Length: 405
Ligand code: ASP
Ligand code: MG
Image (cartoon, rainbow, N blue to C red; front, side, top):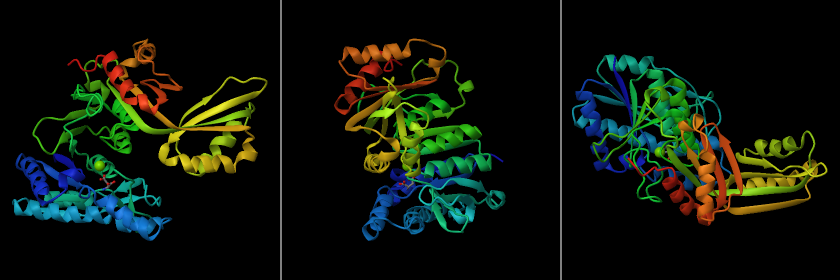
């Protein structure tokens, strides 16, 4: 059985006209012989509206009821899409998270998928019935609606594709693929034809917003080829696939950035076993996601420790560190909410030297001061003052020749 998963994001189902446009794309694939599982997001803006309703009533809301409310946007679009497909003569039925059954853990608001029961849907495919699934939602161990975190419909789609052993998962969105960087910052940015899972994972986690990071992780684990493409054109998009399927990788594939970062430095802490644990333990317990970490060289067993968090989590991080002041034993604290992170990513870095050097030279030429550096096998990231971010992205894009086809 040839199964295709087609996911439509919020802008692709924003109103009845766009749902019809998306339904025509589904019909085309059905006519070509595919069994299709469509996965839909809520209409664009709808989830934000629902989140605001919840917050308006209860700022420290009960996460189970938050999920009950915010999952409703996808229930609406799944039904509307099924109706629209039926009107085009495509037999289709909507499926909510509990009907699929997409079983998750109990982390309401950011649930992880444990299992998907594909038998019922496969049986319906056999009867010639196509599926329209509400993205973003699953069902918790207590049989309550659980959502997968903002942007989670991408993850719903990839998980479903993996479980159904689909041939491909097409992610329809409002851009026509993955670009070498955000074209709003660098108009010369180029659409990438094929990108490896690992590169996409780094780009997504470094701030490129095309796909939810978790969805790329899942696609890589289960080797589900993705295609990111536009709902508003018929152009081929970007294929995200195993690196073996890419003939020769560029040294650098893309430049990603994350504008809203914050940096906290703890001055004059003991350089002894357990100090890092005393700092990062409480942050982990408070669910603060720490990104970059640097420890300075110590002077008479005293040192400075610097870390970064997303600006959204700054207040929480600061409160946590201040509450743990006695256990940590730092003398001073310096906070800087005026930083951004810029990263260059590419699998070719594994076999080429000098990438970091080229990056630093390009930034030096534009007089951009680097505050913190981190690297992985296929990525170099720098933390810089926020106001230089666009400049840094542009000069790196040029330095690595990304505008040349
Ligand atoms: N509607 C949800 C959100 O806005 C899920 C998604 O669109 O992927 O986060
Ligand atoms: Mg989305």
